[in-house]
Length: 64
Image (cartoon, rainbow, N blue to C red; front, side):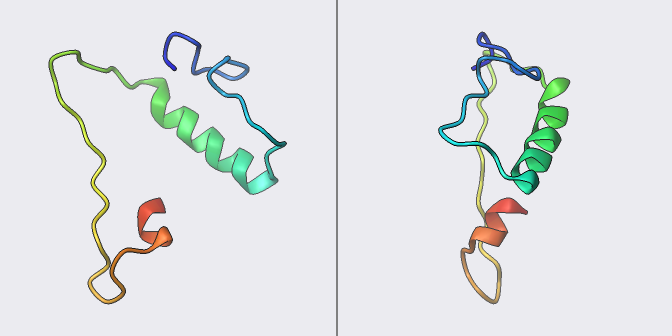
């Protein structure tokens, strides 16, 4: 996706349907976070989804 372009109008941002207003807002937040991201070839990364202590795994927890 990096080679396709992260910026506004970049080819990496292709959607099957038009985004809703709140989704466009979240996308803008995501693009801002990725703007200064520098990936390292020799470093491993992961996304860890931790459960809520009371409710377990929730969609809200993934967003947080």
